[in-house]
Image: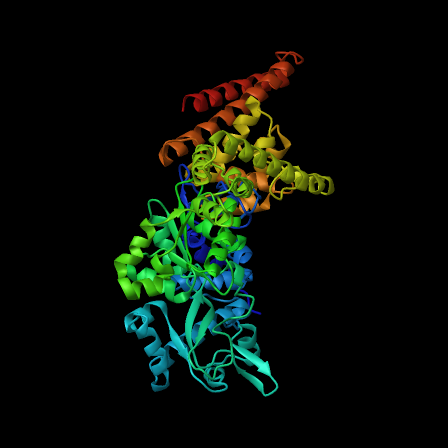
Length: 623
């Protein structure tokens, strides 16, 4: 396969802002001069340790150690090849790639073909919605308050009845049966290969970047023997436990909200109704219950490193809806944001609520939300006869663990009082039961952790680290280490703006700490420190087990008010390194002078070198 020219690889990277690419998956916010941070997409965390430096085109997680450039980000997160990552970014900026030996662009392969197949299928379905056969589908949308504009906004389409209409259409565009099967668009039966979706209303399901990865389909005809809703099966692109319908449309308003709010509804039409009514942060799961993996996706988009965010679950008022709410509550501890439940009057879902009472009623649903803990407590109490002492005691034992799970120490006493009022019991008795429940939960969690620690002695290294990985926190706190650490940090982050001769002189002497010396060797070996991406190259070239340390030095917020101050500080650190090296050499020469005759050639040479060092020291000390 022809290789992309290295000059094009570098050019595409230099024209791409890594913060734009990462920002499509992770909510980023300022973290000091030239740095941004968010929740790591490579491991689960509640406080952001994932940093991005757009100026150097590099990311690093201080929790799990993941680091790299924009290409490695796409390769790790989207599981694409290096060539596919370059081609994807080149396509975004409209850059024509060239291949070695004048070769043509290779056949697009793997995941790129699956994305292309899904995109082609979405276009096909949208076109079919305008066909005469799709009258039933258009009527279904109209009866639910969705006009042609709404259908276009959400990309709604129609899969025609028949056996293999879409298969033939996409075959004509060059997609093979194997590709369409891998994408989940066709199935194989006794009669051969056939369209998975037939005679159904179609919603394209997109990932957070807006790429179509699958479809949800609702049956329209009575003779359809399939389920009411049929989704794309598990594919290399479509993982139902990680997909949230509407997130591509909602993510911008989620990030802009104050507070940041996500509204979780139960279906495609509910998402449409909410968005059209002005609740533009609504999303839904796709054929599965809301689970831990969905929370990870949402938290990265919300960036909920504080308790300021809100997640509002809307559920039908029936028994199934209440069970769904309690399942969501069981995952509440995974959120940092506050969680709420909103149930519409008469148990209507958002789509029906909009139809019967209008857009304002859908927006008002958010005002009627109640905290998830309160909702869960009420559901627990509903199963007991509170008019009897036995019922009150049973209800207390059932509800106390819920209150004990409240993380906010300021909220917990308030919910203890709420529970006491609901039960008609002494608040002191309720508090004591909650304390017992909290201790029991703590003991259970400790017991569950102990066997794991025994089996995995390296677990205490933290968040997937190995015991051999050297980190900034492992470095001793001495003056020599401090200047070497800070000088490398300044060189990696602002070396392109420092006088290159001075930088080279500062990095020419070995460092005293072995880990920092390994990083210095790599930085000093880079020929052109003014080109885009040089620092990433240097960090990647550091030998193990010090490579992660280089990533931390590259990403650590530099202590300065602004970029100009950071450049000045980095330059000053270089001068201090040079002065330190001069002083070290002077001390060695002064000892040598004592052992050599003053009028000898060696003695005169040593004294001349000392004068040169004094002059050089004065120049750097005063500059």
